[in-house]
Length: 398
Image 1 (spheres, rainbow, N blue to C red):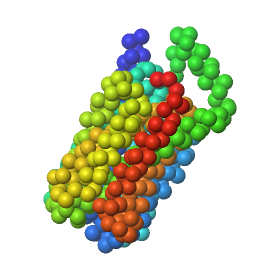
Image 2: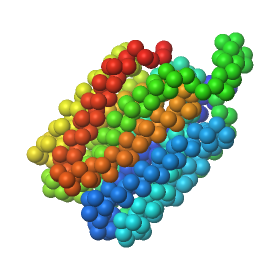
Image 3: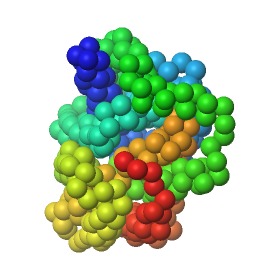
């Protein structure tokens, strides 16, 4: 059916654009954190509390977005959250205290959390329709967007104020949303094809099960995959919010070179995710998670404890390569088990790790040191490996 194939192709392209936009906007914010920290005069602990605004907004919104997706569909919710995300990114440089920064980051976090649940739900449906493990390709777009956003942020850090830089991101993001959003809204959310008997039976089974709560075993597995996502997303949040600060404060890197830390991490993660589908088809999910987590442990210990900027950059890159496919696998498996509710639950846990990690590292940095705090990323990557091994038999077929 050429028409259906064309719709799936357009849907994949539109979702890819939104994943990339999300990474681009988020990276544009994180590379300006040192400048905004200086502008507000916040200590490491105060900055950590302000960053908690992102966490709180995102986690609360994620718990509600599953319901919004079921009521309004994932496509509409994705577009609405993208608009809010692009508008809210212009607000942080307008603040002059940690309290005000925390308030505007609450809005930013709400948009960030909502769009991540919405487009991950749409992506899980597309993965099921295509019957191929393409989830890493969407997250590769997020990583690529993050790499470009961080790279451009590093280039303009010395010439553009945070206000002008983030306002430019708002304009760019709204233009992308206009184009990709129109394409996404023209495509109906995926439904089983009525011409295929197997799909029809699947649809009937789904309708019969829609009113039932998932059984206890399924709920436990969804939470387990959410825990794996949390452990690895913690590392992404740490690299985004504290990587540049570590290079600048502890290793005396210039602002431009410090911004390159997240670029190295994002580039390596992009490469890992672009090859993720092939890797998953050859090794399987458990082996991919175990190998990735082990690699991330070694990389983060190097990045946090290395005595030179270049060794730290190498460690950041290895960390990105290791973490690349763990989060997409966890979200896709949770969605396969629990549907939109599974995606929402695992996303809430996973992105909770990404967003709660940076404030935790801020406190640990005050208590110990920032390099010591960053080693917690390696600890949680190891936990993800252990959980994956312990639950290797409790998965659904690909």
